Image (tube, rainbow over all chains, first blue to last red; front, side):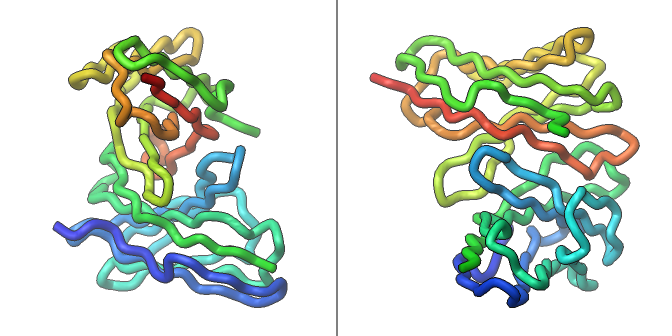
Length: 115
Length: 113
């Protein structure tokens, strides 16, 4: 079974621009979560989508948004980029049919650098 | 407000000895806990988990202990091997929002020969 894939792997953007990151979950997985990883902060939960609906949300500003398509693929968008948005963005998928405690499987991440 | 805390950013252990990684949490609603391992340039991989109805879960060389009264959990690796050198993340979730998993900041484990 193919793992979680994220594209692009690396991205350099300028302050004020916007960016869209993509995540393809493991086949059959319907839940997709997004995390931001910065040095010293660990992984911070952004949001989770299940069946095209945002089911949970972390404490990030509205500049961070996401969506999920009918094939469970998900995109994350960050508008009006700030220098502090430079981070590794990780996507994770799980089967999670009823919010049960299935472990998540992570992709390799997208390294975003904002200059 | 960090709900899951890993107070040791790094740990160095000799090969063959026991590695003990610690994690504290503040949210009493958390009832499911996980440990993930992360190598550079890769996403975290699931290692082991424990439900709050248990106080211990073992999987090969890895054992997780949960002390609910102290809101503390630990991961024991015995014996430690060179391939265990990685960053370890503790994570927690609550049944009310099981898919919202809160991670700690990680502990970098180095296994020395």
